[in-house]
Image 1 (cartoon, each protein chain N blue to C red):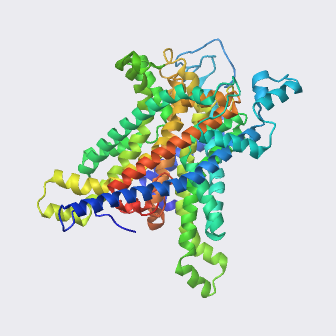
Image 2: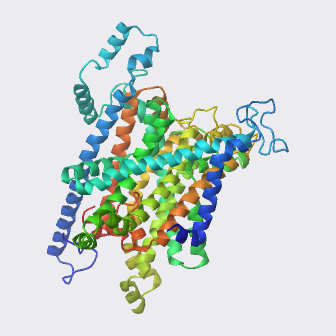
Image 3: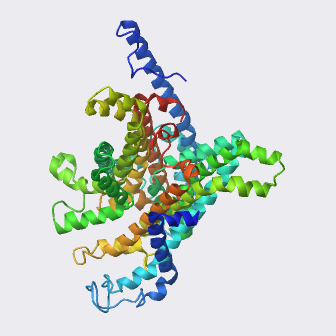
Length: 344
Length: 288
């Protein structure tokens, strides 16, 4: 596999030909990366949608039960099942649902007949706000702590950060959420403990409502990013080219940014790709604690009420989100370290 | 291996905490001073001689509920880890031997499982299929399976391609001797590391599910369920969530500590362990 030299200047400096070749190379590797991710994504999408569709048969639920309760007459059941297209064969149903998904339609809710996309949209805004904020907090915090621990390795700062991380990495998000509600909202009365205010009502009301849930979600992300970054950077500090740079008398700052960070950052970025599923998954429980009517709450309540298409929609959307995010992470990873482009 | 794990301080701490927790699971309900389900008029009582940890919003003794709930809170994660071991390890080993089609299919399934938001799927699927404990354990077990799949597949690959196994076969060693001498020592450390990690993850997921009222149904006590009822009365009993939260966190911590201790004593075999959560072997090899 071709190894890109984009990071290191070649013998021929500058010149149009070289720039052009580099740009072409970058585009080609971008496309290759995209192609490989899609090759993984398509089977994943098929398997996942098929499995979620199987849920309907497994659960034995039907919309007539959900809407009419236990004492529905067979005639009414038939009418409602026909209106949802459930009187057809399994594969015919799957196919029409699947083509609907490709066209951006997730079907109608069994509870109230509304399109699921509109039902999900509002909750998704809330959850994505919280998840994005958590991701930012986790990434910034993780990079700061991991970087500091690696630069000050084997000192008390490193030991302090490492033991702090070993504590934060084992506390489940909902325990952190309860602690935050307890300390910040109930005892100190600094921030509200529940609810959501849209951004249009002002920056601070909005931020104050999403800050605690985001903080509760971010600690897990922060600890894994910080641990991976610390390990990666310390590994990079041991390399011969870093010793060489020290011997040549380069400043510690230049060594850190040019040699160590660039080569040691990979695992920390890679682990970010696995954090989004954790954040979306954690939303279901954090939203319960902070009384947010988000995506996770929607999934939970519709599953409790037996609304199968809504749950299917939730699963499809979260898979699309996770795969898109992974694609982004892979692109960033490919830019940072050419080694990552060699097959997953 | 057990002796070497116990020779490490971290291993001893982990073993100590875990044995206390296992004792709680076995004798917890017998130790409970009162019936955990009896409601009294002393609601939300403070810590006192008769109620060491106070009472909850229905006047039930908190200490008794904590002890009685320990079995359900501990057995769940263990069952989950064992289910995950079987669901993951068997296809993982077979993927090396059953040909490319099976390998491709299982790898895609594992990709799918990894890209699912874990807790959301566990909650949604369990709730759809009727909130039962058995369903919850099966779903969580399947979701935790990728770790075991990867680990056992890696171990099977390294054994299948090794020359020493071939050499032992040529020199006439019996299959059971080869398995005992060469395969077992390669497979055991990564599997036990994953098992310890999976029990830890199981604690988080099972307590999260019982926090939401899924799995064990409300009147019965669980640590997660106690946290969710404490949440509503924080302004009366701000200290109430401490005991169940500490128990959950300690259990997870002890499992992770045990996993680290096993990794530390098992040398190369432990280093070959690939966590299901870090998917970039090409990059992480340069690290520690």
